[in-house]
Image (cartoon, rainbow, N blue to C red):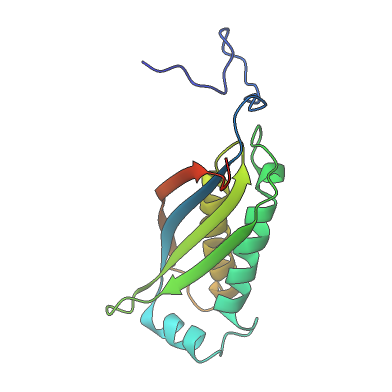
Length: 155
């Protein structure tokens, strides 16, 4: 079995040393969803939620969270991400909002935690903004879809 990189041989938590790793272009994409009532979705789409524009606020919250992931997750490297995008889709069933986030960096470690954090915080923001009108919302299925890396151009 592969050894966990965040644990010492004696089982103590530690930050992984990425000093010797090369700088490469990295991208991660994550997704998740929040299930809600069709009436709640109609209020979101008509911008009738009392707290304001739900999806615009959730997008900003997700991006801001991705930028601060190193402050939220113990032992996660604080990364100067170069791009983050959060998008929303509403399936034909009109019973959920699907959240997708991507994060990019030219760095020595991946940005999957940043993409996952963006999705989770966007979902939490939707929940917070709609909780007065929908007591049955469920956030679920936050997961990594892909992560890629490629050498920096010119190397």
